[in-house]
Image (cartoon, rainbow, N blue to C red; front, side):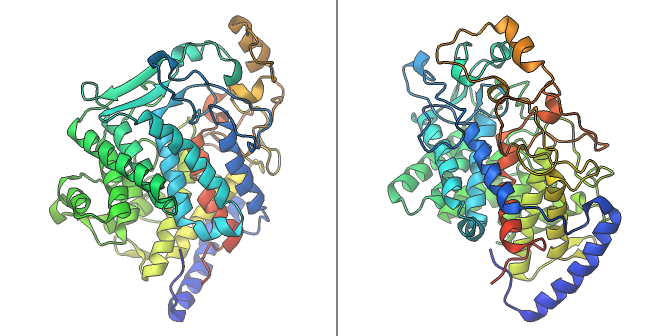
Length: 497
């Protein structure tokens, strides 16, 4: 995305940016600019982490050399090939909802930050990450009105601390269909296909296949309404399915520009102003995407631009509508348990939305208070810089990057030594042997962004401290765009012409 071509707007933004940088740094001195981070290195490593999460037969090009093939029998219980995809975090289960969200947000990243990813020579790697997910999801969606949504029983999986290459738990299959619906997962997978179809338009056959699956899954999702609770208590959809339906319809509209999806958005979809963008809550993502089109929902009663503004106003600490807790060190903290996901998702949305506002010559309105796009860019940079080391601990939350990075991420593959294929692991001893020891993991989980600090900026780098040391694919998928922008544009994050 590009900044507007009008010099007067550039001058206005520059002045506003200077004032707000000073205001922002005064609020949080630990986050003052000029940190000197190697954003390109952080970007590259953030993408590499996704390769460590791959399931299935790994290609020779896989850059995480301590990983091997795993989950090669996935689907065998149903006589189908369902190998591939991603493990979501530090265990060996493939969960459909966060996996599809990871793919959707990777696709959005590839679309929104294409020039930056090309400049950093990372676009190819992002495309590979997307396709690793879509190839798997296409297998899961091979039959109409049916979707395979999970592999591995999490309760059994959690009884053994073992690498996925040596896992012993049965690869139990879970599915949704017309009798057992799962609107959230079906709609999110539809969104992943629709967004990815735009990324791969140069491959017309593959793109068409993705788009056709997206359409079928969206019809299935809205025709068989019902929440799927099979991924609870690990991935319960607390927000319901209305956000996923709006999210999927939005991506289908962007991919096709068909009126049927615009009509659904305008007259059937439900939208709401919230202060969170995550695997469970997609409203702000859809609102930012739709803000450019001056579209409304609820028959015109709700304006997506206004709702996107509301998200910003709820997040930024210097508005009268601020809702989100900010730690003393200046980072967003919504809840313990992979809180970094809200940091990267917010930074992502703020950069994307600020780029849109610059391109269209608009600002955010918080009541009567206008906020220039530069303020969104600045806050996004502060959030990413916090994760990279500009925090009270002066420590990185990215494995293998920066000062004092985590060495004990809660991750089976990284914390267990490489074992020969077929090794019979004693599950009863595995936790004492590999999870409990207070020492660095034998395998570096390069680029993993761990869960992050508590609300007081505290952090203990212990493997058993899973709420704070476990990484997730969707933390990283949403970090790639802001890091690419920082690597190419510099700390002000304003795109050049």
